[in-house]
Length: 194
Image 1 (cartoon, rainbow, N blue to C red):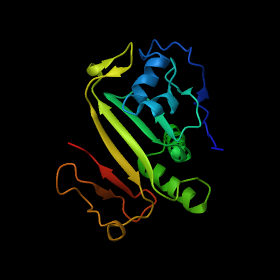
Image 2: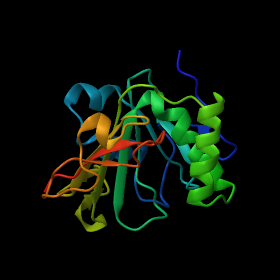
Image 3: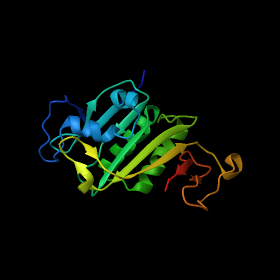
Image 4: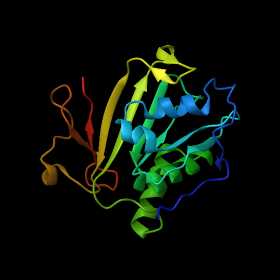
């Protein structure tokens, strides 16, 4: 059973919450958050989005292997993230630390110590994350459909190195995979298609 950690600013809400401030209904947020997934995953992925108070809420709970986090209405542009659900503790801990005012460096160091001490769960094998970015003007706020945008892929390989994978540490050609943060718990393959 997957453990779910929700911080003080996060709560579970029903799909009926009106979201006038951010302009997207719960259904539209779910459609936007899952739009690039295969049909089966679109219907089954767990989805975290935003309430009308612009607080993070669970829009659709699920035991799916994928969790999607909708676009943050406080940021410019559109960005959606979907990841292997075993990464939820890691990402949720980051959200809580960020809400406490921790800097990105502090968040990284705190999570590193917690993973290494066994306090924070982090998958030992490979795990996937998808990041979709687009322009707000390409979004149909009523349906949650978006035209165009870019999808990048992140494959976490904890403690992987260039020597253990054969991957370069930077792309030498457009769209070429490369290894970021080698030798750390955050080591991951980046793939940014043209």
